[in-house]
Image 1 (cartoon, rainbow, N blue to C red):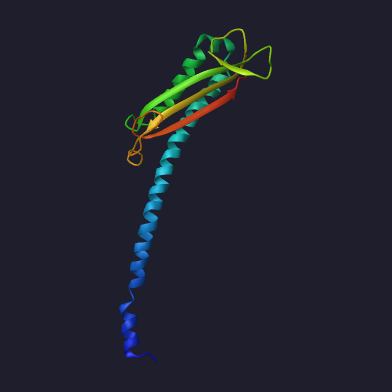
Image 2: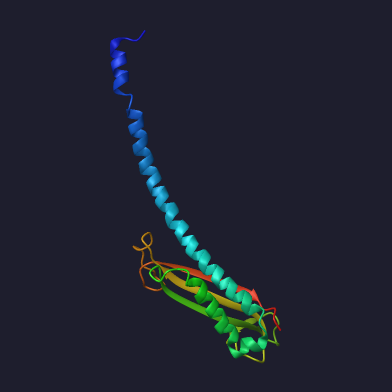
Length: 167
């Protein structure tokens, strides 16, 4: 049998567990949710950039060598990258720099690859490569200043190298 003092002491502590749980959950879950939103948003930007570069290299890797040497391949790759990154709004995507390069095999040394302009007609084309560096700023990423571009936001770098299969 409980005494009257034990019942009063128990009644005074009935809501303390709920208050402690509310404080603990808010102190743990709010930073965790912010962390999840921050990295989810960053990886979404990275996925968009990676897909744009991959699609550009997929189309360039299957073009004829004549089209690549004439500059059609580079223009096509850059237009694909620009059109796919246009899905991101201008306020979010502050800077974009893309590059498209071609890698060739030297006849004297079959193991070494070298980067030249895509208009070299004497060497054997082996790889086509593209990269995109963009600085993304939004409400979650705005306090960060990029060391790469010097602009507020976080840098997103996507790069794809693909074996040349066209002839």
